Structures are given as C-alpha cells and as structure tokens.
Image (cartoon, rainbow, N blue to C red; front, side, top):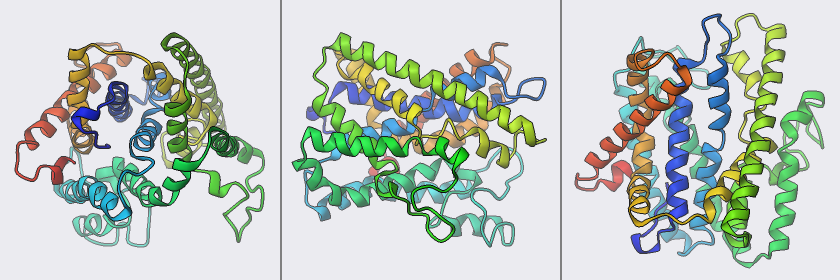
Length: 372
C-alpha cells in the first residue's frame, strides 16, 4: 500500500507486501470454514487463522520502512499519500454500498444510534466518514492507516535523528503494552485507567505506531547474515505461533464455559483476545516473518513477479472482499474434503482474481484514483 518507484524497489519488501495480501485474503476466506460438523470451531481453520496474524502488522511495518523519515515536506506527503489512498478508499466505499452481496443485505459494523433505524443504503453511505459496515468490514484497516499517515510528519524528525538506543527504549515501552490484553484478564483497569480516564500510563506508547518503529529498526539495524536472520526469524515465528494458538485454545475454553451460542459477537470478543494484533505473541510472529525474508535474494523473474503483484496490492485489497463473499460459498466443498487445503486454494484463486480486477482497472485513465 505504499509507493515504490521501479528503480528504488526493494525485493523483499515486495515479497512481504504480497504475502501480507495473501494472509489477509486467507483470513477472510476462512469465514466459510469456521464451524466444524459438530458445531465447534474447526481445528484446521483455527491453525490457519493463527498463521494469518502477521498480515495487518506487516502492512504497517512496510509503510514505516518505506515512508519514514519523510522524503517530502508535509504538504507534498499528504498530497501523494491521500491521492493514492484516501480517494480510492472513498470510491470503493461508495461502490461497496451498492455492490450486490450474496444473501440478504443487513446492517452491520459497530453499532450506533442509527443502526436499523433508516434506509440501508442511506445508512451505509452515512457511515463512510464514521466507520465500516457489514459490506466493507475489511476497510477498518484503512481508517487506521490514514491515522498513522496523519501522525507521520510528527514522528518523522524523531525517526531521522534518533539512535538505535532511542528506538530500543521506545520498543521496550511499546512491548509492555503488548502484554496488556493478558494483564487485563486479571486487572481490567491498570496504571491510572478508571471509569473517568481511559488514558493509562503507557497509552502514548501503544498501538500500531510500534510496528512502524519495529519495521524501521529491523530495516536499519539487522546486520545478521541471511542464514542467521532467517533462523532467528523462524524461531520467533514458531514461538509466536505456539503462544497465539495456545492462547486461542485458552480463550475458547473461557468462551465455552459461559456462552451458549459460541459463534456470535460476544464469543468473537473473547477468542480474539490472544489473536489480536496488539499482543506480544503476534508481534513475535510479525518480526519473525520480516526477518525471514529480509536478507533473501530473489531471481530476476521472481522479483519481477512479486513487484507486479505488489504494485497492484492496494487495488487487490480493495477488491478482494466482494470477490471473497461470492466465490467462497460457490467453491465451498467443491475442491477437496480437506478444508485447510481448500481454504488455501480458494484464497489463491481470490488473490489472482482480485489482481486481475486491479490490473484491468489500471488501464483506465486516472486509474490511481481507483487502485492507488
């Protein structure tokens, strides 16, 4: 989702962006594979869901690595970023309001005073400046990335001038916040948080900004050989995966103990505790994935293949959800009885179908306002 001029392309960043796109699609394609025959969460789906966790953090890491410190003044930065991110986002948000969806269109997204109280299409249009809806739930990420772009001119001077030690201290403080989802199981309000104050001691260190700093830190200071970087990366990923999967099993046991209808909004809140992006285990998986690919060299044709997909990644992301909603029910159970294998195959089909849409749109005049 970040622009790289052809002559400045960094191969491993292209590969990571394509991988992040695939993981997003793999996650969303899993919606059809959640429930096993006995009504419980399907084990294969659970493992795949855990495997996809670095998807969003990888996008954040890539944005920070490529954009910071800023190469333009604030005005030029916003002009370049928002013409390629905000305008396509607005165009596709409107399109998603009117796209035909399988099944009966319903209200969705975070509830508010108007949910179910007005015409569905008027409601979805009204929601665009406020939040996502049922039809474009994957756009939650765009609101987040826009907020990070707004903050980049502020943090850019620090990124430019700080030392490795300065970044290390920030990442240590940020790392503490990644334990909060678990601390809050026993102490829901900590370090000054109370009914009248949600801004606790480490509030300003928390959030996705940490992934931006982590990406820049690894890009600048990882001096390991390709083999050592990959081995450490694999170790971090495996540790993070095991912790995330075990945490999910623990959350499901909590869910089973007091919620009858498991697959509902309340149930998702519980099982998403350990698989949330702002957890220490997912951060380990993300850092590991970054390090695995960071030092690898890719042959010319392979690099060109990933560069092409990477250049269309934003358009691919914008288009994939509607394609997923239609294709997944259509292909469910048609390819193989092995659900995990089918989910991967269906996800690959969705990726290349979404790329084809983005590629076709790229031939239109002013296509950057459609696909970035």
